[in-house]
Length: 165
Image (cartoon, rainbow, N blue to C red; front, top):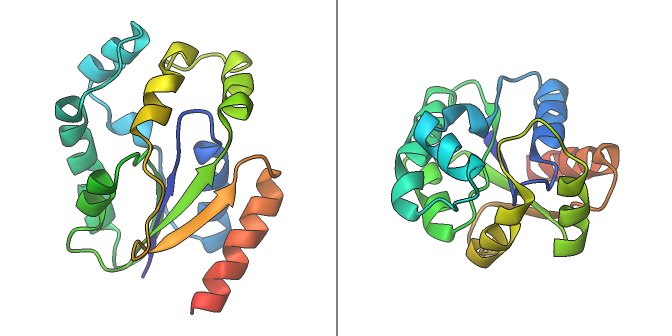
């Protein structure tokens, strides 16, 4: 079965699409934010970007969730900003597919300006865009326009899944 990783910078719509995709596919859903350590959350809350060293334990936890769900499938969110992070998430799991929600800095900044109740402050957006590496040839998945309505993105992803089967 396939585990889908809905990826992108904070505010790109990962949680919204991830929940909708999991529901449409009838598979478990996991929110990447729930895998962060209290130390990572405190660091981000204070406006300090995470380093690679901060992210590795978090990514390994997500990778373990992916491994645990490779038989039945699932959907998990993760910024998965760098190729090396995505390689870790796919390691030993040939069924992983990425859905990259790609949006302009202006669009994402506007969304973050109106979001409340999240530990990730808008001030960290530039650091996320600085780290972001687009999906490359050979990486399994699709780039979707984060500016589209969630229902449109979901329909496009489901169509791509159907075509890939």
